Amino acid sequence: MIDDVSNGRRPAEEWSSDKFEVRFTPELVSLENLWLEGQHGEYPVAEVREVLERYWRFLVSTPERTHLIREYHPDLPQWQADLLLWEETWQRPHPYRGRLF
Image 1 (cartoon, rainbow, N blue to C red):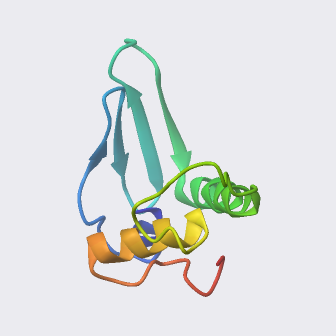
Image 2 (image 1 turned 135 degrees about the vertical axis):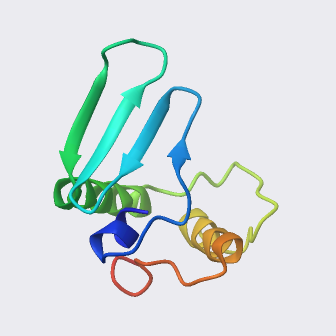
Image 3 (image 1 turned 120 degrees about the horizontal axis):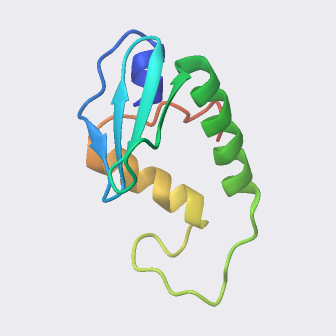
């Protein structure tokens, strides 16, 4: 979604979790904690994108947990299997394919 708004597209859908509601505009990402009143923040899209990309690089660099048994593409490293699952779910290439991984 951050790639979509960074490139002038609307996010495919709104994002929320059991604790946060997240809104995207072309300029800002707004987070609101649904459990704690007054806990919210707004961050520039470029800053959020940079932090998320650093986090993705960190995740890809972590060692595999070889003791785990995975059903979805156990022949691939976890991050590659997750990437394929994302692409299968959203029916499009991942925005970072070929750029970050």
